[in-house]
Image (cartoon, rainbow, N blue to C red):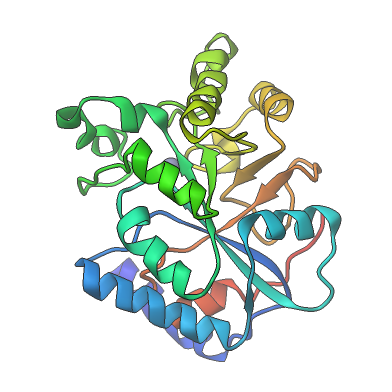
Length: 258
Ligand SMILES: [Zn+2]
């Protein structure tokens, strides 16, 4: 019932919403539903959004946000967390048609564990009830060669709000090194798992700032930055399968630089 009320509310306010100027960085996970339908729906969403916005590569969006250099335009860039296989099979082919990349934030522990355990990786962490497979390293390498950015999402999708600092090298540094070894280029971006401000701590932020160029939340998204730091950038969570009026509603909030 609450879901239905939310749907009706967002559909009606979204109908009148105007996308606000600024750089919007989308944070999604996967395209839901049967592959052909999901790709069509994502393509149609992007086609509608592009009539009002310019799509920019992830690294360019980061640069524009961090340098506060975007004038009055409306920009959208893309990121997908957890490294699900459909990022390769479905998201990439659609984004390619719009000539834009995404950053995929991956968990090496999800990719590396044996296949029969992979299916439960996120089910066990209550991240999703559905069983979903990860990309392989080969798929991730292909995305990187095609110009996608590969970001770190911690080794085992761990909650950094409660992780003890003694485990940071294992969950953070080892994860970065594993990704760099596989893709053969520096891994400069980290998105913390679960993404809310309570899923990170000050010691974790300090450690991340030492090891990455930029850090990403999926919270507080009406402000560009969190913790008053221009290297901690907030993304807007919406899934690629959401109706256009819901997405427009969320993109209608003007972002602040504080
Ligand atoms: Zn995640």
